[in-house]
Image 1 (tube, rainbow over the protein chains, first blue to last red):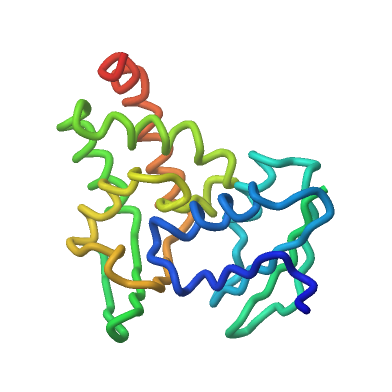
Image 2 (cartoon, rainbow over the protein chains, first blue to last red):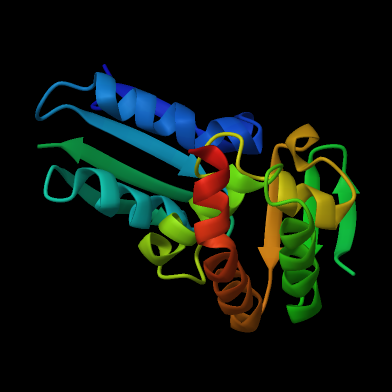
Length: 77
Length: 108
């Protein structure tokens, strides 16, 4: 069984749906549940957006940091 | 002019310059009503992204100016990388700031 409640493989979505899908997935998490983001570049803009929308309500942990694949574990607090 | 390299049917590499930011501001200034939501979003949200990490697709339907300067629709591609100098982002922000009040009036 996966330790993640949801996994979002970001490159599978077109640009205008990437952030939308990620935040919809996060919003569906219950407290202490986690999601994994898999991306083809460092999702720095996403983290800035998380800080602006959910500051103090999530954790961000890099599971893999490139060079070709980036995986980030996000927990809803 | 933006350099857009189509790597394959899923991948784009985009290079933007200061001149592209000026072009986007000029387009917005010429049609403030049409681009009002873009102007407002870019001006209000860019600081959230520390300016230079701003993502045109972070919010829905706010990439028309960006797509105009490219001349293609990035939504047809799953992956694109954006290479732009800091001057691009700060110039764009300044331009949107100058149009912000007019854009707010046009949507109110």
